[in-house]
Length: 586
Image (cartoon, rainbow, N blue to C red; front, side, top):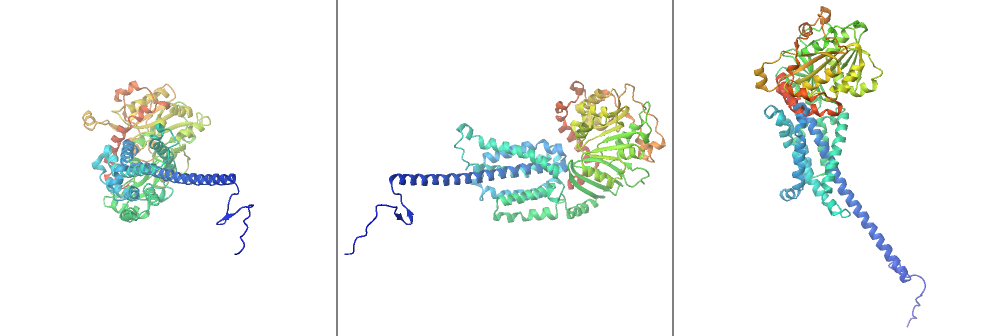
């Protein structure tokens, strides 16, 4: 028999190449290490899993928040900013409620995963909006935006919320108290949604129009692509018809092809699109009516001004709206020690197409223009002949006035305050504080002209007039045209007009000198409308405004609560000024 091999009792033995523990203590230590390692691996896997869950949830919330903002921006050219916003929150809330509460029902009812439908819905929204906008005249501004979003934003937000609820079912909230763990996913998701909405809207406004993918429809295409990356599936092939329509037939897309297609449509009714773009205050376009011979600039569902092209331009253009020539009557107010035009300084807040500042410059007045929108300023120079010999400030008027208040103390002989868009005024520019700042900049014998577009049947007009008269001791108020009959006001329910207020810093009554031929600048429109004619008595304002007092910075809700009604009235007026297809086709 072969000799038995001696097994050493010292030193470690190996099993399968692994070192075996020598003692019981070593064995227990090894087990502990293995348990810790398993625990670490389990924790790591849990953290990765939870990270994926929350990352996907955050992606769904972010895309939904951004799309909600883009939806609002896309509605604005057809319905105006305020009409578009009126019922927007209710649509979003309804979609959140249905999606969050019905995610299980959707999972059972749908033949595919809910999340795979998101790219399809997002891809079809631009096409759906295009066709729904053609019915805006039928829908009206009151319900049109809500109807449009009910067929576009609502299903996207509903499916997104349902997918969010599905994803968050895998979230481990066991470390939270039960009383918090229950509502935490819903409340937390909503808080994140509102935060991203607010932040993304600021970014969208600041960056909009800088490229085709940073325009309204361009952003919708980008978001549809983002959804397809988030939820890739073979179903995306069904989005091809929608993408083809948006690329080749949607006139709202900011491409040369879409612009050419839009012009083909407009030409049939005597219109042509000169130029367009998207900017900080909205969708801006310049349009020619070659049939009637005039040109206008548009901002969303509002007009910033226009001029006749069929009449020869002598010194300045012939405006088609008399209100802008009436603002030039600021020069006609009789004051003591008045500086001659070539020594006077003027401040013009709000440019439009530049009718009033162009006239002031033509009279030799050193004019400063404050305009918030760079595209409006660029179009005014390029297409409406705004002279170059002026000082341009492309900035928000409030921040500009606050930063230059002391430097510009009693600096201007004339101030023209003309800001308006979309059926409602920028409220902060009519507060007592802002108007007092303008008074601070006005010379002791200076004159200010303020244009306010409002409805005589609603309180805001009276509140603004109260505020102006509180700041300036002597004022006279005029409206652009003749007041309508009582029967007409009762029939339409509105009396919307431009109201021009001329004020001074002295207690003496505002009077006007008779204009001369030099004041008309060779313009027939100025000869007919320069001198204000339709003076307004205080009794013309809504009686409810008398008790409302004045407008202050911390009381802007006095006007804001009436914006909806005012904007709806303005929308109806705009639809009579330009043909509906001009508004609908952008």
